[in-house]
Image (tube, rainbow, N blue to C red):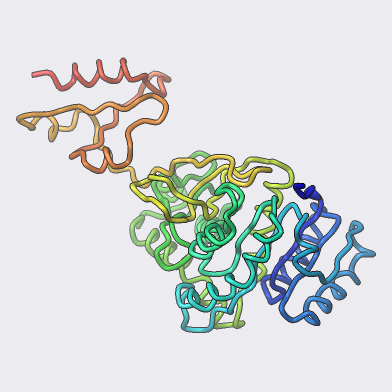
Length: 360
């Protein structure tokens, strides 16, 4: 008989800095009425539960307690923060072997209980460990997700907002790829309330775009290292990021978040978990969202096209477009300039315009 999931219950596995900060953030969120804290050190879990519970007179009612894996089996979301801490000078990838061993003691416990909720991985390196959790649990891909680059994206918005003197909530930009040193700042789609980021920078008197973009991307990437060097750990920012993901799931909000999710051929990637945009709702990953990675397309009237002796046009469908592998094998990606309030063309119209422009 399949276990009934309690939509107002959350379990947190790991009561270190990140786990306890996450528990505190969720206690204040009003998302849950029951929270089980699980840790290999039972006293630590009991102490954290008691400490947070003493704030209940100032919050909505919640049953917070130290529990075990049986207590987690009917939780709507199980959040795994357990793992070795990143030390000064260590990268997230340096933690992989230690934390994979820890996951091999945790995830099978959940699998034995036929867990039917959402498994949210936060431990680092989060993309790799989300893949490990997916394989060890045997759960459907949509129900095993990682916190991904949600925090990196928040840092990106904050630092860019500080640079431009604007509310970071009006900054629309994201970090994708890996929650780590190889993360990618997607500048090509970054905007400030719809205004392209470079245009807004110039409104604010910033014209050294390449230099600023490199500095800001480096600041985002190195944020965790700076915090760890100063206070030995990061936990408040990630706790708020986890709260945001939980909000999306519990309220079925369906925002687009760069969470760790399994990739099937996007950008030519297979059998790998990366932090890529996805719509997040009550089912976990509702569906994946393509992430344009560059704005290197040339205009249709570019003389380089007219100079080609032989030129083949490759057209995709209006829904899915061309496969990333097809685009990668093309010499040029072409864009057609729009005017007079026309914002898009169907394939037939676009091909007619292209054939006319490139006629000889």
